[in-house]
Image 1 (cartoon, rainbow, N blue to C red):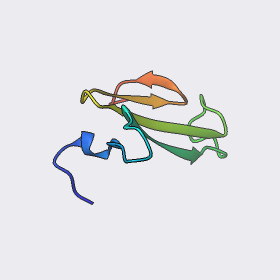
Image 2: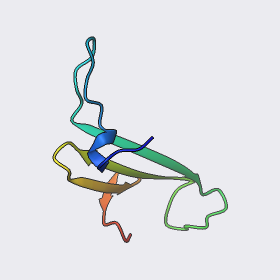
Image 3: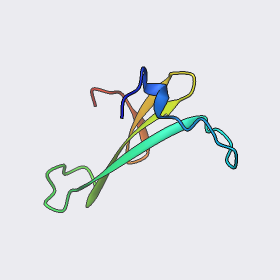
Length: 68
């Protein structure tokens, strides 16, 4: 799948469903061995993209910078 920009991943709508204003993906990592000691047994890393082109990153639901 190819697109001209990141906002192409946001659902544009169909005859039976309205368009969405955001797209989000979350990856859950197993931290059972406590590689990240300050985190729980699972770590959720998310990226959220808005139709405006702005986006944000989250770790366990808390907003963070990309380099975090």
